[in-house]
Length: 112
Image 1: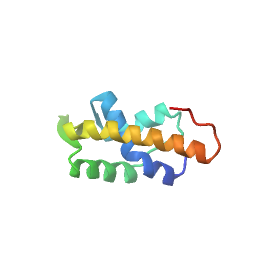
Image 2: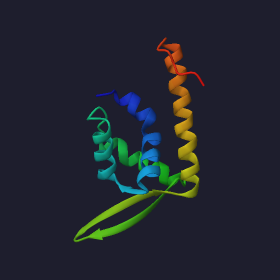
Image 3: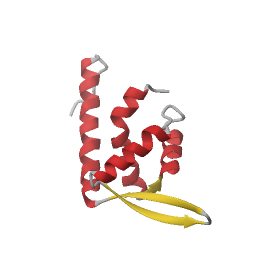
């Protein structure tokens, strides 16, 4: 499992990328998908996930839709038009950052 510092710095990018691929998701679905895709190496807590979702929503990057399933309320998140653009920018920025870190750490980054 990775440190909370590393996860905190990448959480917005992770969420935005998942929503690009899955169109709309609810909170628990996001945590389960991240856990599955990373073979349990990244486990998001509610305390990290929901403040990040709310911040992305406040920034106009996410739209929400509420569905009632029986007596339960489920809040789905999807990307706004600006969110789609920002998702691409964040993923590209992070990829470039990883190449820079590989170079700094002497881990043979891929050449562009």
